[in-house]
Amino acid sequence: MSISRQTLSAVIVSYKSDQVIHECIKSISNEIKIIVVDNSNDKNFKENIEEKYSNVKCILSSTNLGMGAGNNLGLRHVETDYAIILNPDVILKKDTIQEIINESSKINSFSILAPLSDDFKYPNYKLDKKGFISTNNNNPFKVKSVDGFAMVLNLTRINQIKNFRNHNYFDENFFMYLENDDLCKRLNDHNENIFIIPKSRIKHLGGKAVNEEYSYQIELSRNWHWIWSKFYFNKKHYGFLIALLSGFPTFLSAILKSMFYSFTNKKKKDIYYYRALGYFNALLGRKSNFRVKINN
Image (cartoon, rainbow, N blue to C red; front, side):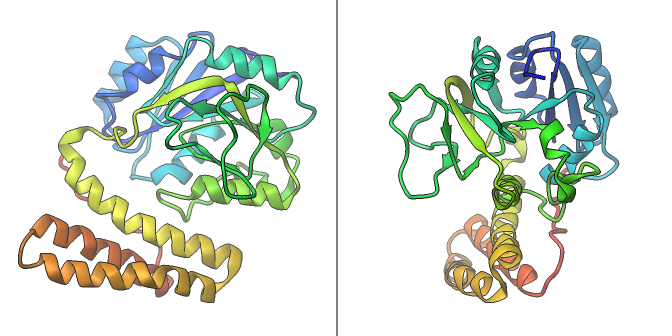
């Protein structure tokens, strides 16, 4: 069965995202069922969004699950063969989905397809070798991994792989960052194909998924979880020593900068302090359990 609007669902994980998620939803065809997983457990948000959009079902999470577990929760409610994972700060172009449908029929086998970000300074994919494909290339091309803010999963194919059954798509140990790289790495290990569809374009606002009033708290969380996730990813796939050595320079730099800014800039001091804490907690084998406190 090929991709169509009837065989495709969308999954969006949100957290205090009401300022941007509407533009995302409006850019998706109303023929496509959308599942929003709200990690802030906001009942008013659920009522408003389901009332406004007939094709949207909102699932409230009792706790802030993060991206990996949030996506898995949404995917458990998907009844179609394919699902596009989107961040709430992604806006689809008019023909984004149609181009994916068109090009998918020409590809023999794939586990993931992804549109191309229109910000060419920050490509949303990685190749096996360093470098990037020319922006003039309109043909689908294989990649090592794609960013998690926009990716189509071939659920029928992935479900045939033993390690991915029972909705075990994203490693839920990742709270945020690198859960997409981990998924792609595991699929690569099973010789599965991942493609970018250059004709299919999206706009990623970047860092706008959470309302700006919470930007400082989210910045602390990003610094903690980025270094934690990097350590965990390297440890999982390449061993403890690689994780230790690859993260230690950043850890040491974060400590020194935190000490320096303790006299001049409290916000920067805290940012580097939380960055160091993320590495330290990963080093000790602790879970990614840091959560910022945001008042509803």
